[in-house]
Image (cartoon, rainbow, N blue to C red; front, side, top):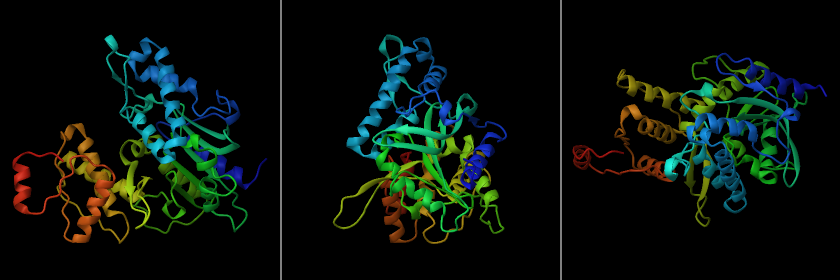
Length: 372
């Protein structure tokens, strides 16, 4: 069937296939080497495990054990909930898990993705991907990295004025399709979801409310961004190119505990950055690494995510091996900001977080070479 919806769907796929540098390979959903009940493309995942892990390459059967462990995380989602299962799977994606595959049973780190040399990964964009769990669905667009479905996109028709990208987003969070509930296991490995109707493009993390979805542009775009296919394709290229996608996965996907009300327990949520936070955090880290300029000014409006930007920058600075675990100071000039910063950093389980109340105490910590 050929309609405005497939025009948008094919347009996004064609743009991703034609990127400069590392690009997406195309495989239609009907041609994927997997069964409809499968979440991973085992063939591609096994190849990646062998190519990225020398000890697994020596003993390819170890790849089956890794996949067994990953499926266990997915099965746990029925008890832990989607966000917690997604967080557990994220630890595997970030090479935070080990298995006894080394010499004499030594534990080795399991690498699912090569973040340093992204050309070593296998990037595939697919459309009309069939998946059967408690119900049967067809996902419009799925992006696989090394056989893992990290991105799912929902596309709607642009011919009806009443239809917007929010109708695509609604398929994830409610209604008849309600992907995050009805086919929950498929989203355990998920990094992000996106939706478009050919005029506007928006993305969000699992279980995000519609108001928490957002556009993806560039801060150097000074002219008004007019809705239309050109804008959608630019947004898709900007967000979904392999380099940006892996940067988001490695440094910007956060899990945080937030308060939901006086009489309700706190809940765990997944947070993705807005594009200004993404750009600003990277620029801060670049300036620290380069040593010049030694200062900078970022203008924010209220509610734009200042605390999260500080958190992203701090985590990236501390994760940079060349910077050797630097001490990061966050200075605030109001009590409400002090509370907000502590809640943001504390909710995201930032390690070695120290609250200092005076200049004297700060000096003592610095003299002790405290890291954090």
